[in-house]
Length: 537
View (cartoon, rainbow, N blue to C red):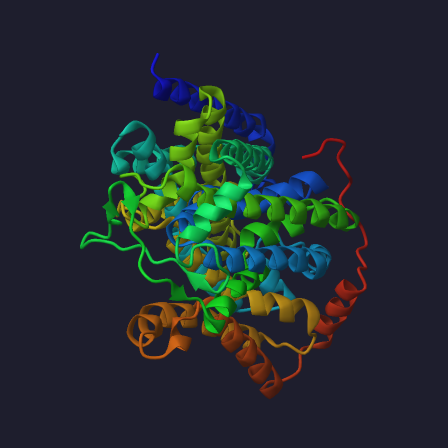
């Protein structure tokens, strides 16, 4: 039997396990909308920590980050990884416990829009509606990055048509999401987190041996101008089609580009995104006891640091072991480095598990995105605004299912271009969530003077600024003024924060009931926590 078909069999077996998890939690998930969307707040510390990080990283960690490192070297990915590692730790340190307590105190919120709406005791549900719309839009982009990963994976491995695999992957994700809900995707994400870190560390160990030692990897990287540098970036010389030129089998690089102050600040700003991404914030809300958050913080931080470091090194090491390949000679194609490496240097069983890990991590993450986006429409817009909390729970579930299919279709359309760069898709969605919800989340949790008007103005400013910066300022002004080339998350986050403060100070102080609830959350006064369940789920 051919090597590739053995890998396919292993991938199928692996995915059957993932499906089994969904089936196992089917009855529990369908019990009610709270169980379906938040798992009844029963997640243990290990599942909370590792599912949060796996749903955040997914295929982007296994393909996007190594691909960027392979293409232009250490600088960009190092500062990005450093920003993400810091952001992970700080988010768990200052946000997790306060949000866990506050979301329960404030109307037992089960979604991020729910929390914001309850936090400001709004009656017209304006915050609820705005936040739900932004979640829908940015998660459609996130889902597209996952579908693109599936398309690239099967296209690179088996030569299957990219578009066909894109659609098949989306159908599978929709079916899986409809079955298991939040608990299933959290537990499967926990499994993916274990597989992902084992895969990354295994590839690093094998790669170092095949390269002749870590010193040989460094020497090869240093031989490429700007590749092994924190303050310069390598510049692949490409033809008119964007493919890197090779002479005698050796890829050609031009003079190194500068990676200056604004570039470093731009990449570090990735860490700000953590304060606003719903897939992580929901895990904070779902953990069964706030006292277990400290353990989760340690687990999550260690996992992130090891995984990010391994992903960066795989890209750097790839230039030693696979310096030139038709599958890797474009910026988009470079994201296949882990696939090419696994096929070339690993035994079939290990390669199969790694390929299955990429697929399963991508699918389990995309179902997380679909689930959260569907909850924004069904639980927040349909039930919270259209039916004013009088909708039948079964109808809410059906609206959720329809929404999942609509978002999947939108994701397919966005990812239809087979040259889509996973890293780029993720970076835009990450900026959108970080700037729209990050500042408001921090002010909501730590500043009792913030007002409903300030919250609305801040969200709109952050979300709109991301679009303007990406499609107007960066596109037309970045070549003239370096500042406008900065990652859109940073200026949008700052502008949103300023607007929240200014508008809040110019409007009437919050009602006594809101301030009282804020103080209760600050002190961690929860009358009754959910009963702990014996299993780690």
